[in-house]
Structure formats: structure tokens, C-alpha cells
Length: 326
Ligand SMILES: Nc1ncnc2c1ncn2[C@@H]1O[C@H](COP(=O)(O)OP(=O)(O)OP(=O)(O)O)[C@@H](O)[C@H]1O
Image (cartoon, rainbow, N blue to C red; front, side):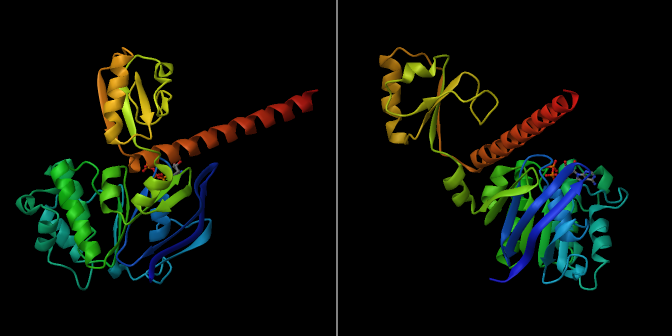
């Protein structure tokens, strides 16, 4: 299928900081591609390199068949993460203002309806709530009916109902053939909207795939979480592997052990085990792995690699210094 976004080996550094390291991706027409990853992973830098607002140090990018700097802006919609439109324009005037920048723009009232802002159309931007402001910003990226849409954290600050309005809008746009690249910290958003997800960690795209493929390959197994003070050793005779994940890693609350590889039909046997072994517990919850597990596993693995690398570099530097002074 025709690639609407194509990036090969994009690199970008700021001083000592590697913001992008050999990032490559390809997004087909009508696809929704979600970029996820921790703060500082390089998501915004990647979006900026793809939209021509930052120049990569090396590598190449093409969008809509052209270089980002030369692309026909009428076909492109961009919602940056930081976007501060004039405060003393009403939501409707704001959309009309951005529509006026294009020869062939949509009716601002239609866009207001799309983003669920009809009732607030006459309110100054600065008087809109944070979530309404974000919806107006999303609308401003839609006025030219773009073929390719970049949305950097589109639903941050929007309430759950409003988020669903924006999600449906993105789904409708993609169904009509618009290609969407979005960044998000909301795993439910990525899982619901994205045909494919790219996980950035420490500047590298460490995994790409459909949410289902990523969960299968990196999400781990289904788990039963038991909130208990008991030691994992107390579960030694259970047929399933049991552990107490390291504090702060993964999604396990304090004072919980996790039974892995367990289907719901086997929960009863675990309850029997708890009772026959007199193990006190306060709560049991069963979950299948999801995108958040993928995120935690991969982001965590990258962070550990980075820490190990920094430690071995500083160890090597200490040794070299010791050698010089010896
Ligand atoms: N203009 C700049 N000057 C210096 N450093 C920068 C600049 N832009 C980005 N960086 C650094 O590059 C790294 C990647 O930043 P980027 O904003 O792309 O991350 P992000 O994944 O979008 O983060 P967040 O989730 O917090 O929005 C960070 O360490 C950031 O501090």
C-alpha cells in the first residue's frame, strides 16, 4: 500500500541528548499510527522532524510524497503539543481564522460540531475550559480537511466524554482515508485508535506493530494479583509461577503477589489454595496483558539498558582516570 509517511534512520541530538536514534517508520494511507513512550523519549521530536519543524541531523523523511519542508500544506494538518492561539477570539472566530489561511477550507461551524463545541462557539478562547481549548485546537488542525494529520497528545486535558468525541472523530477521519499520526500517553487511546503503535524509548523506536501483536510479543501472560502480606514462598506448591514484582516496576500494588499464566477457570483452585494454606489476602484481581504492560516492559527494559550503559561508561572512565594517576 502507498506510504503516506516514510522515515528512514532519523537522527537528532541536542548537545549530549540523543532525541532520535535511527528512527524509521512507514505509515500507509488511512492508517492511524500511535507513537507512545515515556516523557523525553523523542515523540515530539519525531513529529517535528516529520512535519518539517525541525531538521534531523541525518536520515530522511517524506510525507505525502514530498520532503516535509516542501509538502503541500493544504493537505497537512498539525496539532502541536504546545499550541496557544489568540485568547480574544471566540472558538468560531478562531476556526474561521485558520480556515482563512486555506483556499478551500471547511465551514467552521461544521468543524465546531465535529469537536463538540457548538454550544461554546461564541466563547472567547481564553474563557474556554482547558478541555474545550484543546478541542478547539484539534478543530484548528482539521479546517483544511487534511489528507495527513499529526496530532501531538490531542486529548490531554479533555474529559472522558469529550475524549470519546475526539476518538470517534479520528476514527471517522481514518475511515474516510485520512492518515493519522498521533502521540499519546493514554494507552486506552492508542489501543482503541491505532492500527499500529510505535514505542519510542530513549530516542529509538524499540517496537512497532498492531496493538494485538505487541501485546502478544511483549505483554507477558495473564495474571492474578493477590493483595497479601504473605511471602511468594508460601505459594511454592501452587501449579502456577508466582512472584512479587519489584516495587515501582510494572503495575502491581504494594503488598501483592502475582500468579502468572493463569486462565480465569483456574482462579477457583487458587482461592482453594489460599484457604487450605491459611493465607490471608484482601483482594484478588485477574487481568489479561494489554498495551500498558507492553509499554512498561519495553520502557523499563530500555531504561535499565541505559542505566547499565551509563554505569559501565562511568566505570570505564574511573578506571581510565585511575590508570592515568597510577
Ligand atoms: N529544542 C530542544 N533543545 C534541547 N533539547 C531538546 C529540544 N527538544 C527536545 N529536546 C530533548 O530531546 C529529548 C526528546 O524530547 P521530546 O520532546 O521529543 O520527547 P517526548 O517523547 O515528546 O516527551 P513528552 O512525552 O514529555 O512530550 C528530551 O530529552 C528533550 O529534553
